[in-house]
Length: 220
Image (cartoon, rainbow, N blue to C red):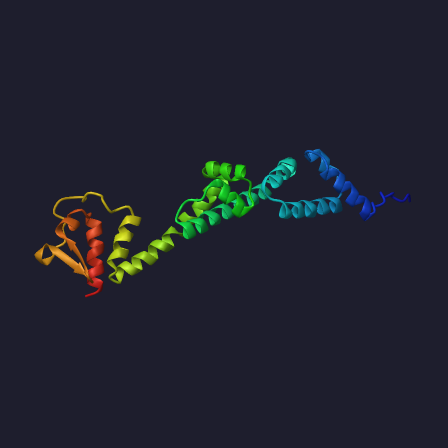
């Protein structure tokens, strides 16, 4: 039985030289990496991560442009999330310290991201799929927050009650029908140290009034 010939493995020094030659190109394409062995691909990925971690500003932008054709979509999304977090944190810190919005140059210096990338991210972030996914995460948690606010409202916290109505979109709506009023002595009700006048009550819907009645009755 004839023996199957196997291609001899390349020495590590030869692989490293091959990777460095690949990185010296102006742009790396899928065709450039298509013929790499698994070992070579692993070394290339490690080298790319090393370069990205050590670069910043326009140098980082140029390198990302070089490897963009061979970047996986997940990697691109990870980079976008990283930029978004760094920019958001830099803006928040600057506002806390100086009470004014930072310039794009200040954000760039703080984050190590180029001014061009900062400007592009701020301009286009709403159109990015990862931003839409982030918003959906917040929406997913809204019911938990609403439940906590309602708990405080049911314990007699009038500010929480007002916030609850705002969260469910009820504040400012006209009453559903005439005659749905909460009977209160002297045309007002008082919860803790907060007074709701008849004018306040007139602006509430029947459902809102029932919720206030529940809050009051639960404290009785």
